[in-house]
View 1 (cartoon, rainbow, N blue to C red):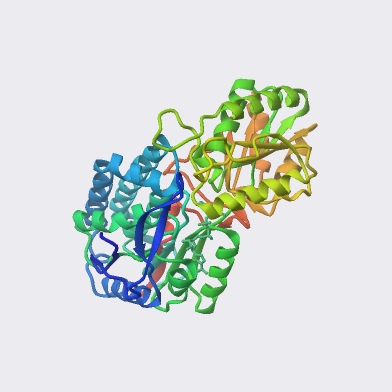
View 2 (cartoon, rainbow, N blue to C red; view 1 turned 45 degrees about the vertical axis):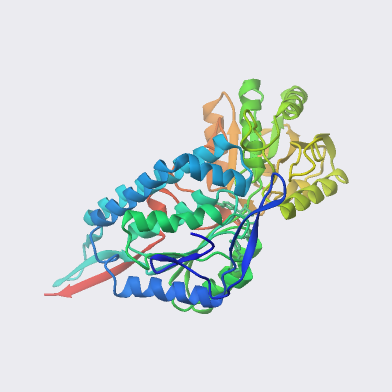
Length: 480
Ligand code: NAD
């Protein structure tokens, strides 16, 4: 790729001529430079995508033909597994085993949507029974057009696949804007598409900053649909911009997801899922278990175990053996999370962590951090931190746990643990959240819908729901 963006089937120089640094968060050193895309680059990319949609083969060929290309993209990602995972570690900081899961999942997402593309051939026409004599009607599914996809930095390649794969399966063309913090692996998708035989202009990738490249993409009249994953303020701004010319928008935003643990839960299982829920991917997970509610009889015992486990987590470079917690994604995210922790110290009891681990001061590392004894209106209890920080509170009754869990402007994930499955199901139904786990937390499946209630977003990704995001429904009625 050599410092180029991917437009109209090839890597090309950015119109801006400017580059920006990509920093390795394990040592704060620059390890790559990529083009600082601007509105001219976005315009070029959208025009290419528009041409490919209006005149090219991609929306017109069968789902089975599109499936063959998607499958080859998935295969190519799987073949480059180790190389892509190592790039993710340098770009994002995450431990290698987690980066390998991400790459495997990414290949799986392309294979999954290849299968759905194939099935679309038999599902695009639905006959409709009408009450009126002489008329027949049918509903036809068609690709929505040019999709603008804007993604965050926590799962760089996987987040790209959640948008690119269903959009391509539907027959859409795409302009992808990766996060400025982690643009490397998403940019690799261009070459992967090329090798898989994706026609020119169907996938375009422009790197750059939000205001310089993201904003022009949301404003561009050639874009029919915007698919965004990121923070609530950016999502809100994108929705406001899209409203000007009535673009369809899907938003996957932030969270402050609760996990409710009842006293009949085996302690070891509770410890395992809470630790994984908040500390995998450094807590930089939209659905992270950042609020834990523990039933009073086991509160003290479970808290002691959690603190103990948190202190034992191996922190270090993502490529080192046995590391469970890597550096945060960037110096700015490191500063932000440390500032959140300082604010937390003024309104809660710091149980463990709260600082930079000794010997790792050169990188963007933060200790696994647990807070307790905060009020329900405490900032640290209510706001998303997006780092390895969890807040824990006791509860007395099921109703109180449900009320506290739902008392949030977010509604992305929620989890409940109990040996009583009737109770767990009752609580799961009562949660006002789009993704609910029983007796686990965080496992994500390509087949199942993903998305939030309330300020956590609009629409669903993954599964068949993800494909629907990129399809229009047309009514065709005949009088005979
Ligand atoms: P962010 O909102 O700062 O940035 C996300 C993307 O938007 C980046 O590519 C950025 O360049 C772009 N952007 C910024 N300003 C823009 C503008 N004015 N117009 C267009 N694009 C613009 O978010 P982030 O810090 O990258 O990611 C963290 C957030 O993402 C967290 O809130 C997290 O919860 C959320 N997230 C949600 C999900 C989910 O599935 N719900 C998944 C991952 C992350």
